[in-house]
Image (cartoon, rainbow, N blue to C red; front, side, top):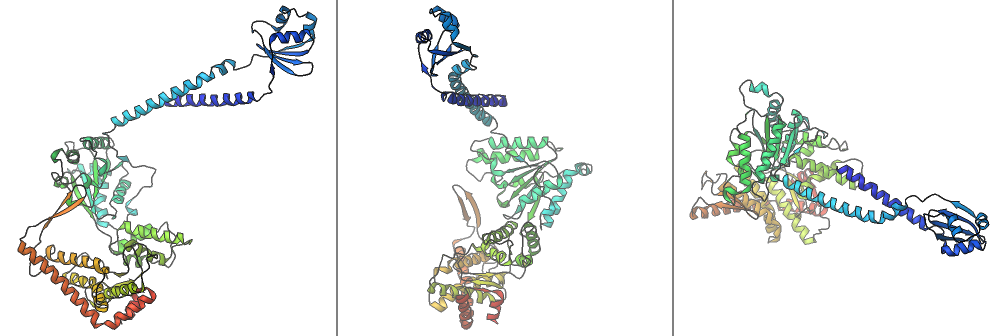
Length: 601
């Protein structure tokens, strides 16, 4: 029906345009003098007329001098009879060349056309308004329907081969693929198919990519939706959308449902405003009911992803709902190299680009960070109108991802540059002389992001655990810049503020979280509660006395002072090396690992 109306309107629009054009051209024809019928009769009697062209009631008169005139007569009466009625002699009528033309086409249509166009315009306006109203009604009727999207078959399928690293996670998910492909193989043994899989990991570790890989491997319908798409301002809409989602999934069984950022609706109940009538809690209740349910024969598996497992409701994590919890860690050096190779497939790298070296210099980077790193390198080389990506661009992109781009417009004065050089030299020298500190890879006094200068320390190997000695040495390294400013300039600047914050945070964790303090013993202090209302607020519940709080503050101060004394001692003992490092920095602005090793030899 819509297509018929559309074609009808297009036809009349074209017709109106053609009629307008024809009318325009007809108005451009040669103009003739309009005369009365009595005058025409008199001209015939006076032998002034050469010929007359009759078109219906229209008369076109050509005079003896070839001038033309126009007149009208009654349509029901012929011209010959008309002239006879006016007593024109027959011989004079015979002397005139009278030609009868055809009735002009479209006369009636041209007459009613001015009425048709406004009528069509009004009809079109009414139809458009009705269509809009119908669209609003349709949206109102579909308000409670799920917005889950079915994965497009035309899109390139992602498989486990496209996911580097995360070997244990892939092994766990391969079982899910088998459940979906061959459910009878497991049900015949009395095994129940898992209802849900929860992917846990830091942002950018590839949780969504792994979910797409499961879909690609299983070759089953794949519904994907974000947790925030369930929640609306109207109570009950989220629960309705959950019901609709599972209804669609059961029809397409066996299939996968992927809920990204499930913590948007899966937060612990009873912790927010609104009590049990909160919309988010009703949505969570419906998810719990649908996942547990009474129908154990539906092969619908839910995969959810979150980086906040600590805030999830315990009912979500019990067996029968999310039976499997797959942890995805940050990639180690081998995984980072494999990830870099995948992202480098569509990028023209120079032969001198060593991805193993890049992997060594990027501890703590997630898969998303590594993809961004190569993308930044490609942007740098494209801006320089180069055809390939060189190693310098790739290494520079590491610092762009870590600290931000170079701020060449942020020019320091000579005094500020000198202070920055000694500040960074202090970090580097203290780090070099402490056994448990990470080695120095680069020192620079070029501004990046919010930092006036920076020192990059990278561990010799990937570490999952940190010891007490490593924390103590790391605090001394952080205070190396503060100690250098105090030693060489007699006062400190605001450049050490971030270092002091990080050192204080480390000392507080040693005392209150890690149980490493000898005086307070192996226990934790304080419990953090998160409240989300007009922003994120974290409150600490104190489970200790005021006297203990005073002791905690004293122990934190002791750790900071000990670290500062260590840094001051090393800098005072090696003032000549500090001068060398600062001198090279003021001259070259950057010192790499090899050159720094020679200066410290």
